[in-house]
Image 1: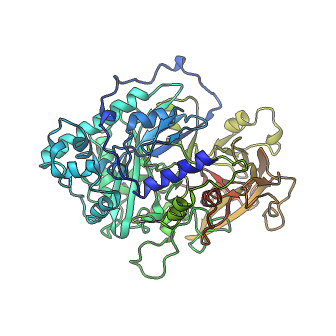
Image 2: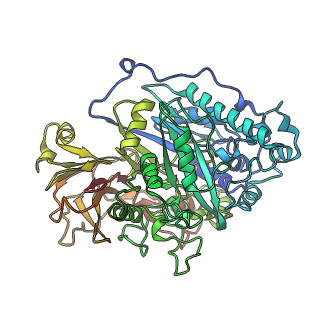
Length: 626
């Protein structure tokens, strides 16, 4: 526990730029071996009923300027090795290693920095000796300064190209293309079909005033990609981004986008109008529905599922909240409005489907980390053994818990990050991308919780069937699917715990629907652990499980290793637009800030929960939607 605590402190201190960056040789920039394509299907183990694979689709390395200025010198090769389970030494000298390797990863360095960053850090490039580049390598431009400079141009569309790192537009564009090629080369070098999948991707990082973000990760199906990474230096608004991406990615190229941190978008990611106030055409909506298939619901900078007092919410919408609800001021920033949150976005998509005959917001759901430490998947500490406060750690912990980050605010409000889960027939680029595209995916807040969710003409006793998954595929649709023509579907949900984490407390079902343009929701507990039964209100009695607030050791064993149930919605209407998704809650455990404070003998923060219930989300099943 002590080692893990020190590693967490080191990681978070790096995030806020408190360490002095080491000016190490840029050996991580060496070109990787030749590309590796997906192997023939006969050479790869296949799973006809699909298997759960875990990965991270939001990872930054030293090739991102904000990570580099924060002290990270670990490039893509180190990040891929870490994802595969290798022990990696961080720049502060501490070692980190996943207890279970990831199945897949996409490194998503900021494409807006492709013009200058590698040129600034690669000896021999003409830009290497430019004053700005020398200052960056020497640590004279720290993370806070770099971020301040970046956000000074927030809202300019297109964003200025190169920002002084390259001498002219032609050279900047050449560097962007060469960096994009290197991103592809290193991903291809680490791709091992059947064992480990390295998807090619990048992050599109448009900025807003007040440190807001319109960010998306861009993920490709295979080696056929766009000629360059279309970024905020190329586009005038979100409409233009999707238009250019669609035009540039022609078959056999196939691409999808994943919005993230909509809690930082000040409501703009899913606004009914574009940034300039103009309306979206039917062509805009159709294009977006085709390309944008998945939503990143949780990561280090918070959770964007739902929030109490902001539209459709419930009492469990209290996880990973960073900002308060917006007041009446239309121009308010650093606050949450309905169009910032996943559940409300799904509801608005149903309304758009009625109004415009197109629902652009039929989004599956994943989690990821957004790590800037080159350590993909390093999301959730295991339940700790008994520990004693670590001598000498108190000062660092107190400083961290009080630290304010320029962009994200109080560091103590951050989360360790989440994971992406997919149900795929094999661990290959093709099958993982196809799972994302059909939305048969799920997200977790860090633990490796598995969740399956089906609906259709299923027998009520499917939970007792010898092969319920085969039957569910035969007679129903999985998460992400559409219920067509089923007048009274049976839903079946199953979840299993991460063996290294807390057991499962309950599985909930979230329903959203519209009637005459009005939005409604219902949340009920479908199955409870420990023999509890849901009451008349549809909710389980509170769990007796808890954690010792001196050691963080679990108290009680009310949770289950797995839960499953089938149910019927008595108010289901095949003619009413609706969605259903499952949410899994674990037994309570100490929040990371509690673990950290207790390990150092520090005071617990009084503005944060002491305990949390980790969770997982399935993608929705949709009915009567376009």
